[in-house]
Length: 144
Image (tube, rainbow, N blue to C red; front, top):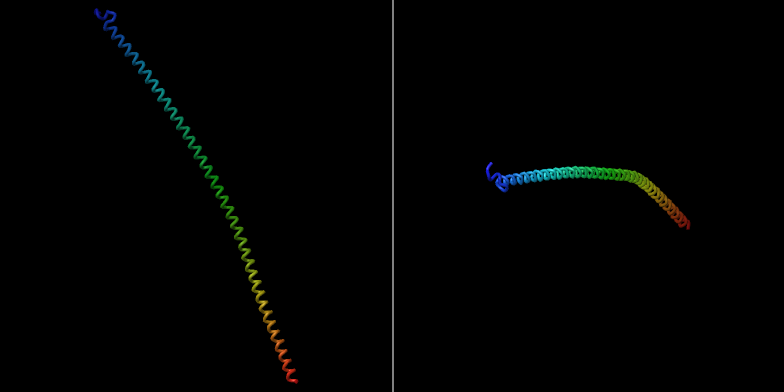
């Protein structure tokens, strides 16, 4: 060994101190890397958990939306069926009313014909009576 290496503040103690500092820095770097890796893994796990939660939330919303749509379709179908039933009732009532109107028109035509026939008979009767009156007046005038 040389004289400088044996000196207490010599080069070898500086090298040894530098080696220890390097070793400490390497240890600190390794620990920092391990902490960073652990934090990255934790963040990735959180991200995956959040993605899974969002996926479940989206599925729930889709199901809820589908259920809402199904209820709306059923309500629409029920309303349509009720409207069609009501339309059928109205059409049936319309047919009955049209038949009644036709029957009433037929009765009115019959009544009008009867009235016209009675009026014609009444006119004929009146004309016959007038002819008889004229004939009687002529006979009486001829007797005088």
